[in-house]
Image 1 (spheres, chains in turn brown, orange):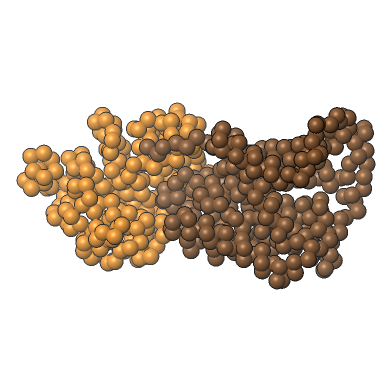
Image 2 (image 1 turned 90 degrees about the vertical axis):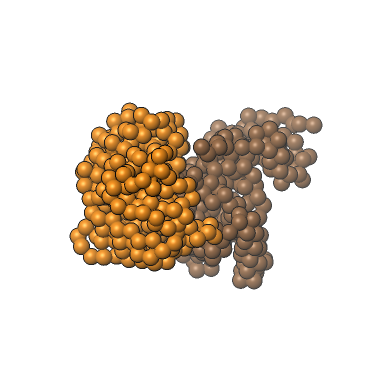
Length: 301
Length: 239
């Protein structure tokens, strides 16, 4: 039932898979960072992604700002929303049972989605792609637009920057410390709430960038656009090993490849496109529940 | 330097400390001894800002003069004021290297050169830690972890260094080493509040001591006085 494919064709799919996978990875990083520190699945993360896409739409299409400003404004706006979610929905529940924060996360996610329907209307809106990013060119027999290369390049660069921040700065050191022992981190003079806010800000900014690039790839925005990518990115985070940032990127790329390649080789399965992620989730949970790069859970001495 | 008046502490729903007075003078080693559950940790954790459910008064005198009430202060404020706690059970961050643990201890400080100086200073006190500087905290031995916990608490350059059970779970030879180092740190000018179950070792180095029993101060005096006290000998020093 598979089809034969030329090398050029394969490369086309390959680039497509890297692009989609790196977007999943970028969103997954936000899930994995928050989970690593608070053991909380931030269900509103996919909605921050959606807000990032909307903000860039309003900035560039409605208010006709230049792209560079529009993108920066959208990132700033979505980051602010991510900080507000933490402040309003999670911080008051810091000492509550974990399930309370989880329910709050689901609630705030529904709230953002439905508020967006009211404010933005439920109608999908077309995003204008900057012509510069869409000017097709060929390498060998592969037809490409600059956007297809820009998306993974930006995603990888941001992930690398984040790793630098986490492993080379004081704030990053505090983050790594909080993820193991909040109380001891406090004793070192770290304002834990501030570091947690920074974590939300960074995760939200990455989600916003992913949302903007997503809106450019599939040029439209709608209030529920964050749900499926959000789920998939969460699966990517689990697949890669939740808590691990390289794992989140690896998980995102794996998912991108599985999704694109299975449809490329078995076009008849394209109706099941969204199911592959969940199959991957079931498999990893059966075979290696800590994920590809997940740390073995150690007992505390 | 630290005046505690009429302190009550509630911890985990229990009235753990009842109306105690304590006074810690600059340059002293003060020890708080007593049985398990007597309220020693609750007291020290209240001073560190970890336990917020307390009443009474705690007044800290800054080295440059000027008094601060510690009421309502979170741990990060305490550290900035110059109060640092090395917690019970060491609480080393096992996935961070020795050096990263120490760097974290200096989190409230900004000057890189001064931090590097402090790092050299604690490596001088604990040469073993220098050998282990790039090793993960979790791979250190129990004794080394205890050294690291004390060194890390020193990295904020505290005026008042509080140590919660630094001898816990250590072999006798290491216990002696830890107490020698505590004395050395004190000689270098730091005030020390030491919580211990090893009453003998603690009283031997303490200028002043308080005995806690079920949340109340049963006895107080100089370390030497309490070492000679028949009640203390019977209850805490094995007769």
